[in-house]
Amino acid sequence: MSAAALLGESVYRQLRQLILSRELAPGQSLSVPALATRLGVSRSPVREAVQQLIYEGLAVSVPHAGAKVATVDAARVRDVFAVRAVLDGLAASAAATRVTEGDLDKLAMILAAQEANLDGGTDAARDAALDVEFHTFIREASGNVCVVDELSRLEVQAHLYRGDLWCSARNRRVALREHRRIVEALESGDSASARVAAEAHVHGLLTRLDRA
Ligand SMILES: [Zn+2]
Image (cartoon, rainbow, N blue to C red; front, side, top):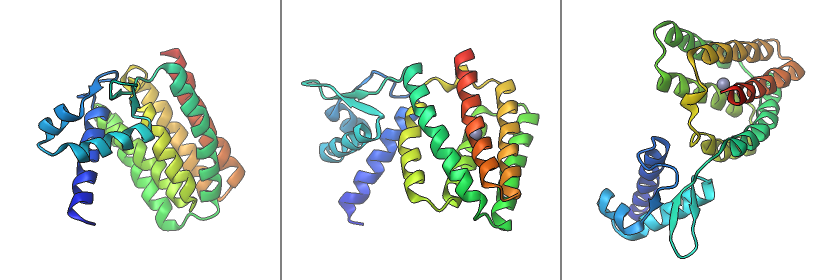
């Protein structure tokens, strides 16, 4: 990678992190000169990073006013999750025919870490990170690169929504039970059950979102 490309990648990652951590809040203007000053870089990598964020759905372009951080409402999250249910079902069903003993060991470790975290007072950020790790692992185990790419692009938008509102400790326990069902189906190598379990998990998330 050239120095310019490395810098561009670094600026993009920093901006993405600022948005996902809400230091740059939904609706906030993404002024290229201001961000270049803030990050101590020139304007062109910032401009390119903002284009990438627009493509990813984390920012929107405003005619004659540059770009701003995307705002995500519950309706949009529902749309994202409806697509996610289908794609995660596809991933789990494919993974069921391909997982190795080593993969199942890794998934068991993630579930154990989630359980330990819930028993130990629940660090919300850690729970969220383990959830991402769990789903990413299954998507990668499916061997379908398109599913991995689509979901990482799509799902990031759901992170803009105030997830803390509906991810109560109780909901996290329910989600962990749903994760166990997915792993059980993968263990038995049953594609149909794996699909059903993965879809049921995302539909469960949606139901809990609606209730919040
Ligand atoms: Zn999950």
